[in-house]
Image (tube, rainbow over all chains, first blue to last red; front, side, top):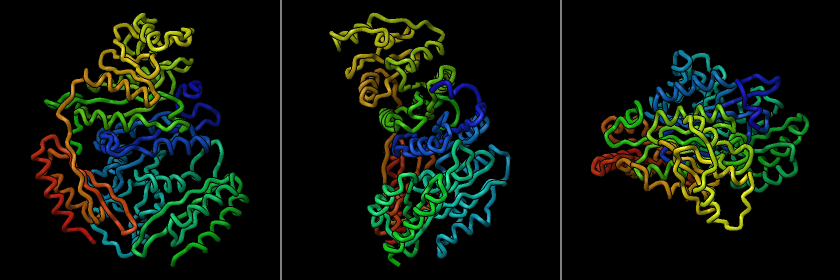
Amino acid sequence: MSDTHEGQAGEGADEVSAAILVIGDEILSGRTKDKNIGYIAEYLTEIGIDIREVRVVPDDPPEIAAAVNALRARYDYLFTTGGIGPTHDDITADCVADAFGVALEVREDAVSAMRNRYPELELTPARLRMARIPEGGTLIDNPVSGAPGFVIGNVIVMAGVPKIMQAMLDNVAPTLKGGKPLLSETRTGAIREGDIAGPLGELQARFPETRMGSYPGYTDKGFQTSVVVRARDPQVLASAIAEVEKMIAEYRRD
Amino acid sequence: MSDTHEGQAGEGADEVSAAILVIGDEILSGRTKDKNIGYIAEYLTEIGIDIREVRVVPDDPPEIAAAVNALRARYDYLFTTGGIGPTHDDITADCVADAFGVALEVREDAVSAMRNRYPELELTPARLRMARIPEGGTLIDNPVSGAPGFVIGNVIVMAGVPKIMQAMLDNVAPTLKGGKPLLSETRTGAIREGDIAGPLGELQARFPETRMGSYPGYTDKGFQTSVVVRARDPQVLASAIAEVEKMIAEYRRD
């Protein structure tokens, strides 16, 4: 395949290139085993985007900013994972803002996204860290735990927790230019992922032209799961979503 | 955590740094899921070597040579995996020889290593590719399939197949200089990461010789967060963990 990797991003008529940047000491120490690289690589390959490079860097501001700038200049897209939680070592938003030379402030739409998910949650300074978005960025919905990711320029900033990252990737994928456009719909209900795992597997088998994913979360009111269906054909997508709605109605517990 | 990552390799009295370079289109396409990064990271952390960076690059000669030169200059060791098999796209040895500016020839000791393992093996040109070692390199025994890895300068070149890579790492590990190993303790409680983010940041500031991380999850019973503290000094670790225990007792919700 090396012929597809020569030269810079965007040289081919319909080649779209990308890199992945994984941020976190816990990956470099081996304490946490990365599950995102393989997932993102396979996902983007399917929608016609070629991953050309991956880097893993520590929770170190100059390292992160340098990698962001090197990779966003070189490829059509840069996908980052990790470092957008509430703690002192969650510094990805700061480093991306530095890399772009823009301000980083708490944004009302990000606060609203978190409040919508957890109406009674106390918005501590630590939680408000997660609502800081680099100026000019647009939010990526996080159906699992509320705190959003964001897109700025050609950089897509996602969580490190695999389930959250996967949901964010589903949400951002329809906005990406790729070899083949992919449509996506989401339905959410008060269901447990364990209850629908079997039925969802059967639905996936009935609709082989779609990709179905489920993303469990936990709110103040209990379990809630989002089901995402992706397909290239809008009619196939509509048929599959209708079945997902029936399934959610059958298994919901509220 | 960033204070431990500033500057170049080897700055600390007993810090030994390393990078991992994973070579292969199959990882970037997602067809093969990497299992080596996490394994090597955990292994080296245990023997006191800090992994500071990981890169994955395609089977593309200039990309590989550039990454080898960037990473070997910056860290005490560079570990590569992949690209030393018999096929046309196994070009790691070529690229490492280029990066060092040395010749690459079939070596008798490498041929012997392969013959010892498989006396009746026909040494086709494809197999002899695997006996080409950059000038000045020393062999790493491959007890699984015979074809050796090699060490040249501070670069350790290993196979991509996990079982073979793991055996090679065992063989080369006793020759590596290691720092003081990093100790680690974990405490888990029914706490929300957002609640302890502030207090944990304060604790990190009070114990600069440690690295503290928090890892949220949820179970059927609700939120649960693990706090990990790592340090080289056992007394510092014990003092920090005692404070973490107090913090968890204060914020737990069960």
